[in-house]
Every structure is written in structure tokens, then in C-alpha cells.
Length: 160
Image (cartoon, rainbow, N blue to C red):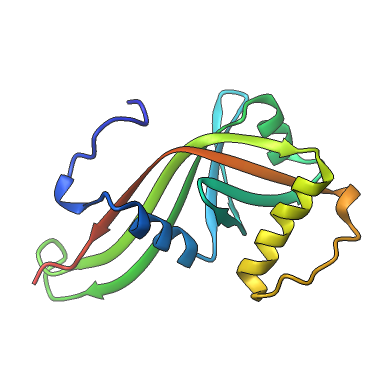
């Protein structure tokens, strides 16, 4: 199934791009799925979003960077579990409420120093609220930009 396949439960689909971006921006952790020698490999990461770009950082070496250098295709996911309904029947009374976003795109290891700083500033701004950082470890840090090509959002409210 391709990443452009329609959502099966259209009643749960979030089509509004602003709402999708709100869900992404509110998340603390983003999961990145990549290809590792033909097998799926997923890692949770800190991240920041700017437009259709997702910024990540990593060590310069390791499995994640090796995977991305070999094949930059990725799938990203964020979610928010919002509530749980419980009751005596496991099938009829239990339900959860959540919202999530899945996106597909191409990851690149950023080489340009100015772009690396841009990505790191976006990350620090997201988690600290500040923009006044210096980056002494720039030569030993990999900055990864994911250019999102498509995103879908889904919301599952608890049925009353």
C-alpha cells in the first residue's frame, strides 16, 4: 500500500493542515521509521518543525545515520493519547481517545554549517523557548532535515 492511499476511516481523518501542524508541534517525541538493509527500523527522537521540514539531530556515526545515508526515505509519526474510557466489558466498554499524524518524506544529512545552525536553533527554540544558543559541537553533530512530502492526521474521540 502506497503512502497516498486514502484513509479507511474517513470519519476520523484530520484534513486541515493547520490542525495537523498543531498536533506535530505539540508532540515532545517524534518516531522516525527508516529502511535498514531492507528491514524497518524506528527510533524516537526530539525534533522541531519549520513549514514542511522536520529537523532532527544525531551523532555523526551510528545505525540511524548509516540507514539515512543509504536510503533517505522515512515515515514519521507523532501521537497524543488524550483519554481512556473503561468499563466491565473489554470489547464494548473500553476505548481510547487520541490524535496522531503520520508523514512521509525524504531525509538528508545537512552539510552546510548555516543550515545545521538553523536546524539546531529550531530544535532549541522548540524545547527551550530561546534563540540565543551557540553550537560549539557543530563539527561532531549530524543535523538531519526531513522534507515532508505528505501527511495525514487522525483523531479518534471516545464514543459516548
